[in-house]
Length: 306
Image (cartoon, rainbow, N blue to C red; front, side, top):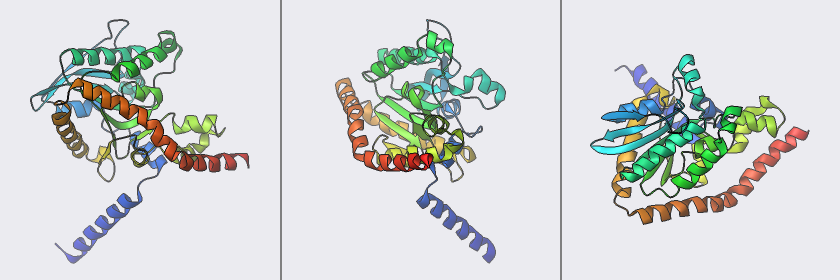
């Protein structure tokens, strides 16, 4: 290996270390989480499972392509998988409604979760959606009720639940399958009550200020880890999960196997008690962090009025 090649190698390492210490901005994470070639729930399920059988329909209205549910085995352990599904191209994105589920998607997820509880199977959820579908049809069929019921039922399910935010974690659409014993985020994923564009449009009166909104909203994995809302961060390749999807897949699989070995030995009473306690303490963490968030938002609003 030439001296020049060695020098270039170390320069690359220095850049990677600098990027890791500095961290990406909120807007950069938003853009990475929306990459069309970013691996989604289907990829992770197919890559880590020895076999997988998809389940369709909610037994009430129909099947929702934006939500994938099914049973798979990982190293001989049966697991129920639930996840938001986006497409890899324009045609599939349209088929999957860009990952935005209607009420039947959340009812399908609940049907799979209750089946898992009946047969004592742990549940793994993959979250990647800008939000639930806001159309009139969804409202007419009870999207609010469907998400609210999932929040109630998932919080007391008598089996272990692991949730992974692998891309966008948007609003109630993410919460509908986001209640679990442990919540993880991929390094470049985001998690927020609304999209930066929606925040900028409603509160800043200017959709073009989405980048500024993303910084004020504190929606990155680092922010959520600091607020103790997520359990931990799953690493990605330096250029994002799409550049080396197997690296991230292996990290997720190792996390699942490690946690299930521990959680499956716990009684369901302890699982539910810990899960409810975790949900109730989120407010305390946010109250501690609120001065920092409020200061940043005040700066943004002040600039808006000028």
